[in-house]
Length: 125
Image (cartoon, rainbow, N blue to C red; front, side, top):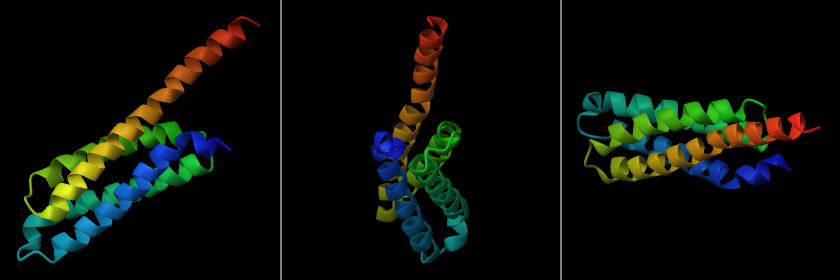
């Protein structure tokens, strides 16, 4: 199945979605949640795109590479924001987001390599 080749990226996306949900909820419980608004918003965006990316890879969607490229960008933004805050939940989320961003970028770049090798193979026939 197609999803097996993306297993590590799917796992990273699922872990990131959980970390972001936890971070957003924990931020809402901070003494001044209004100061955490951007962190919470990015956590929610990141969790949503991570779930979408994992689902797209699992079903072998032709859009999985594009979704994962966007997911990598959003994970990086979320990780950068979370890293600004000293709370453990934000620091853990930042690490998880960065790992996911790396996995998503690696996965999205595979398409370019596969397309290039596919183009060479089809031009030789």
